[in-house]
Length: 107
Image (cartoon, rainbow, N blue to C red):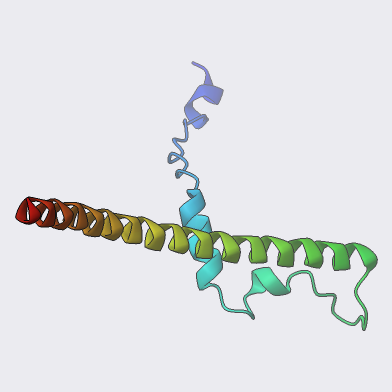
């Protein structure tokens, strides 16, 4: 009898959750409060001025946030432009019908 094998119970770990999608990450970032820990983690307690590396990290972070904001605005503009294009197509088709009708009346 092997005493060691009785004490070795196999532990079944739960499966890992799926990583978040890019949309979920962007949503989390947009919903985060300005004083959220993720935004303040780079601040150094007890220091009046940040280290040069921290300044560069902050600059890159702000650039990323600005990029995401601009990207969102571009997506909204794209949606508006698609809607306006569809409206213009409908108006153009109606104009073509009206022109054809006027031509028929003058003949």
